[in-house]
Amino acid sequence: MTDTKRTLRHIVVHCHPELESFNASMAATYCAEVTQHGHEAISRDLYAMGFDPVLKASERPGMAFRQMTDVHDELEIIRAADVFVLIYPIWFGGPPAMLKGYLERVLGSGAMPLQFKQEAAAGVLAHKRLVSFTSSATDEHWLATQGQLESLISGFDRYIEHGFAMQPSQHFHFGSITSGMEPEEIQRYLHEVKARAQLLCLNLDREVAVAA
Image (tube, rainbow, N blue to C red):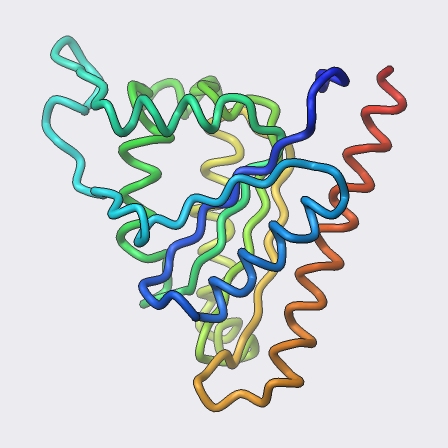
């Protein structure tokens, strides 16, 4: 049950090296709509943060496990979230290496393999919503023929969703994102991001009202 005495919080993790990328625009659009709706949006730009994606030997679960300060601080930020949003480009059939490192170091901190199998590696993500917005330079039809998008959703989104005992995840993809895109097309895609954020906020508010 969501706590009705606090503002609903969305953690938006985006991963792209270019400050003015389409992915950065998606993150800004999503955060602006969430804020407009009265929710709280906390943006985590992994490249701007200089996040270190390299897992250290001492961070692996076991007797010698030690949680690094940057990981601890990140988990504290995520802990109070209601929605966990990932925004990233699909590179070579998967998420950027930095985002994968974020999963390994932060979300997987202290989690044992058996816990994932039992869908019990709850941690700070238990019962939260996972929403992903991705982009690719190729069109969705080509991705479909290669099985890339389906395998990404199955092997990344649902792996996180099930392993961390989250609510059913959502994934929205935008294809043919290139430097030569027309501004009108970009705005059309961003309008869809805005609409998705708005709908999510409305559904969250409705659930809070019912639970009150």
